[in-house]
Amino acid sequence: MSGTVLITGANAGVGIAATRLFLSNGWNVSATARNPDSAADLQEVRKQFPDRLFIQTLDLENYEAIPAVVEGVISKFGRVDALVNNAGFGLFVPLELLEMDMVQKQFEANVFGPMRLIKAILPHFHTAPKSRPARIINISSGAGWSGFPLASAYTASKGALELLSESLRFELTAFYPPVQVKVVVPYGGISQTNFMATAGNMLPDMDAALNMTDMVKSSYKAYMAKVFEIYASMSAASMDAVEVANRIFEANTDDKPDHLR
Image (tube, rainbow, N blue to C red; front, side, top):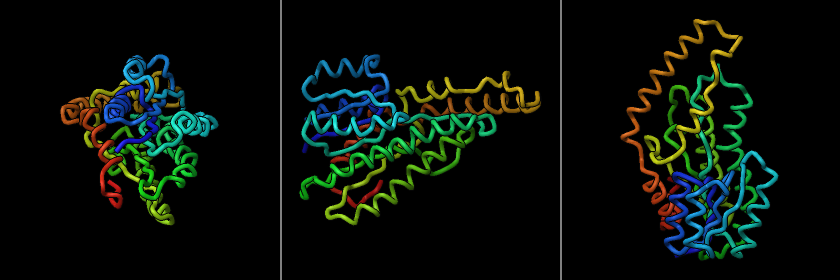
């Protein structure tokens, strides 16, 4: 079985691995990225599949662009059978040090962006053949199930995505057959991604935090160093990006429509 899938965050890691996997199995792929022109791996894949890979620019914070992305894939391929909400990032900073605009960005990428994409694509999914219901695949995290140090905002966003997926699955049973909702949970982190590098680029400058005492700054610095050391030691147990991509493909093609995870 093949069809057309829209994959967000397709420039690296799980996104590019999933793009390659779907294409190699005969699917059309609409791959989105914030800066696709600088995504060398994605551009290289397009050379292999020029007719079946359609690359679009999408920043999930630019919610006004989302409907055009959905219309773009339908205009290109005539239909869309699946949505993979893969784009996102993680903030690993004590909540006390986080500016609320960064928390907003966290939720825009991990919750509100996927929510807006789902709302934009559902009218098209409702027209899918009854023999082939459309699917929504949301990429979550073990952090959506349990709290982790330095990840207050990130775990809150992934927990929200988990419960959004579960509630949406119930709501869509109003239709027969319902649009199917699946959640892929990569436990232990994911190797071969830019995830932690992106998180590191967002660490606050504590020395510039004028409203904190030296005691608070030094305590957080020591604690963060210890936690990041633990996270680094856990990386050996992380899932490979290709393994996660395989789970995404399986979730999109299995014969278990009643299974959320």
